[in-house]
Length: 174
Image 1 (cartoon, rainbow, N blue to C red):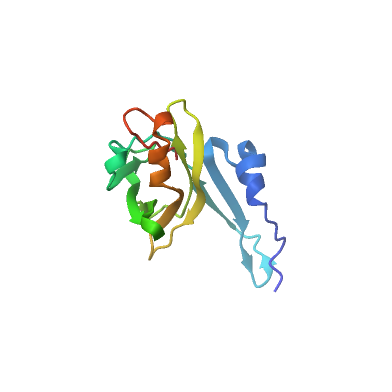
Image 2: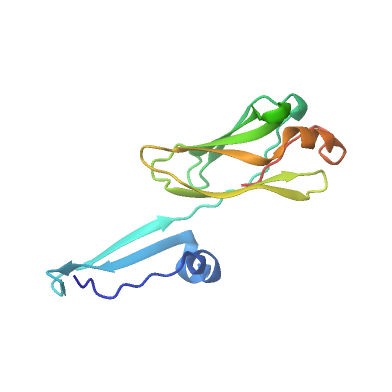
């Protein structure tokens, strides 16, 4: 079956290289032509359009009393309507040799949300960042939750307390 001209643009080109061309106003518009019996339908309206909104949120989240850190939740609101779209829950998890890892659970609240890219950093008092997580989540109708273990130990952070915030904060940037 011939479906006409099949042309795909690489994700890297759409989201990074030619972002301004493909995402004016952070909206991706897709245009496709309808076919009937392997031939283009030239009668009437034969095109379909869809738009995909792209929203970026950046924030610094300070987790107080990090030394006794048990669990902390942050709600991320949409920039357009201030409704909660995602919640992040940070919590400790025990590993081997009494090590304590930090886990983050991501829960999507917006049914329209299909993918999300997360970049989480540990920040010191000078604003220097250490990459903790750089991953993309694909949300499905049946599963709107993802779980990650960050790539550092809570104990390591406690040992480096001199360079961290005097208020014992853990800061993240999304």
